[in-house]
Length: 99
Length: 155
Image 1 (cartoon, each protein chain N blue to C red):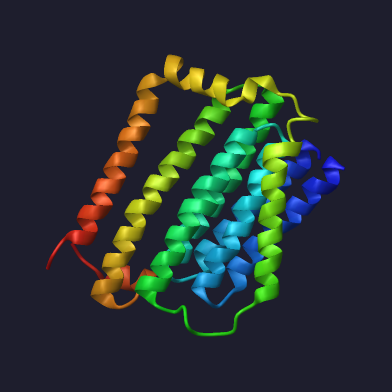
Image 2: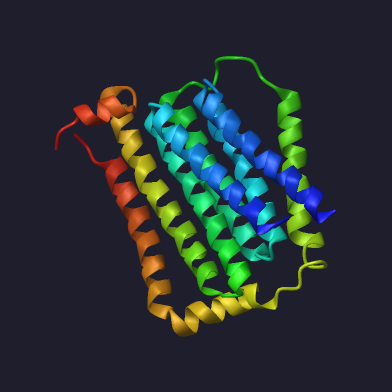
């Protein structure tokens, strides 16, 4: 279990999330793709934390987890409203909505 | 042995992402990510961050993924179509059970990294970054209230 293999996993997760963000058209999976990217970034943070023996990265990861959870709560509510109004929640339906 | 465990978790996490990317049904795509997050929690634990690994499993696999599945089922409404896969469900269950076993029992023996314990992390937040900690809790409260307001708004 080298640092390289951990960074490889982190990079693959970010790449997978990025691919999902551009491949999938519905908002739910786009949002989840962002979560996958965040999880990959968290892993990179923790590998650096282990290498440098520093607690700051751990704290950053905990804050990122919290902010991601808050973001998901608001985003799910917004998606629910979009589905109620438009019948589906895709990138196109959101781009058609005007404030 | 720890290398083997790591590569198993590596494959499990990427398998989840693969299913997520190529599944045509949204609920299965979301459920596959529970596997990814659970495996990733195990990886966190293997590199000495068992507490954050547990947090990842609880927050992502336990709350975020379940929230997404509920939204997919209740609002998008596609739960009744297609076949069920009991073998896949069993594999996912066993993987997550194995994961929890790693998180709570085995990992403390080979990796004795004291600086990453919840005690140190708690002291770090409550002594050095108290305002950031409180700001984060305020953010969660705001998110919960605002999501309720968004959902309850009438036309």
